Length: 136
Image (cartoon, rainbow, N blue to C red):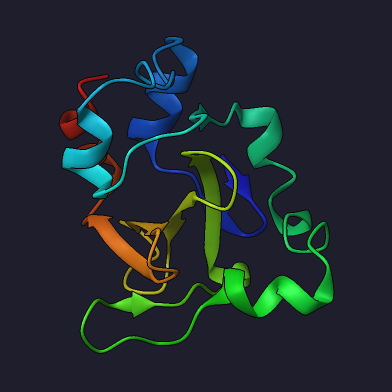
């Protein structure tokens, strides 16, 4: 499956089709272990919301877009997100999205998260590792 010219990894499609792409309970320590933050209102997006990918930035007032885009980081790469080379797949609550980042590899995108420190950080080198770490 292709969304906005980005190939959705088969592992993600598989857990979506099996109904397993569901956020663990909010009180789960898994979020702190995987993302480094606690979850407030976690949502793992269904495929129908992923297909609306490019519109997520349009829904944010222009004054705040810079916050969501971030800045390239040297200490905690990547630091930023490229909306044209990423696919939102969930969030941990308001202002805490996570996405597939296709910049390092079109075939095996990494998983990045907008942390509480307002930097996009890599939380998994690929979706398979994220699925494993989340236990889903």
